[in-house]
Length: 196
Length: 265
Image 1 (cartoon, each protein chain N blue to C red):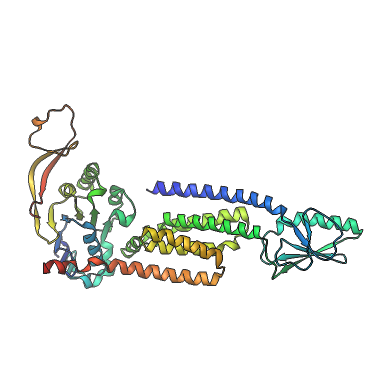
Image 2: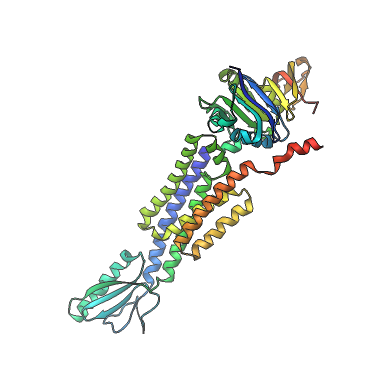
């Protein structure tokens, strides 16, 4: 019994090779997340047609597509016609083991990201999550591992990063700040996307 | 989001009930002045009794006195019998007094007698408002679009049937209001069918111009083509088209070959 939760290799449509180990939160950084999400849905619904290798919970699942769809909790604001992403995440049915999240930068603000990050850390730390987004902040807040649309790993640099929320400037040292009262966000890692 | 939908729905319900009650009051008022036609000799005179040389094509009701029987011809499928009964009683009473014998009514539904224009107009106005009310509530609680089909295919049955339930109860609530206020809705089935059809087709096409054009076109069709079998037939066709189109649009879109193109570059 392998602990591979989801593995998609050599898709015939634009989708990177991906492997999610149990409990892992993987992100895909894409400029056009909608397209990638549509392709992922196609793969989930008809794996045999769109991909060469499709593994779910350590099992070859190309031929089980009808039942295997039940394993995904698919979240996107468009799909559910519901703007509140937190609510969609909280409504996750017990028996659906992989959360697939489509988030666009335009749909979400930092306050939301913070809420979702805290909720996932607290309640869904054992869950498997696949995030498709064009929001760097969201990837930094949720994922353990990030790849780009070609499947290359992107570096999540560890450290302490401080960002001002009023003008979104990065700050090296808290003592630099001259104002009396400033909202800040503290990040423990930063996504390095200079490679793209 | 949910709250917003429900508040739009409640506004619709209120608007629809007020509209129906008001329009009925106004219609009753206007319809009272519409004259009854009689042909042959008639013993009494009244403001709303008019003589017609031959049997008319179109009238609220046609009266003709034969011996001690007052024949009342009503247009077939007219639904206003309760409204005119009071007037008819007065006529019967007056004629009986005048002729000094008891005159009995005899009601006949006449196939080629048409209902008055006022009545036709009233039915069409109500039908149109009913049509757009159903259409709007169908758009609020939409279940026929691509996204809902995906949810269904991903086995979110509970959510899907919840949405179906919302849509059906919205539609039935408007039918119930209609029934409560008008007591008869057989004229409105046609509008219901065309409203469902435009809900189906507008959910499929995400183009805003089409989404305005389609309900307008079908409202006009509903006004002028009163063939219910034809309507049911295109409703069925619309249903099949919507499912097939949605299903195809999940799998076949422009982006399908992007990966290969990238490799060529």
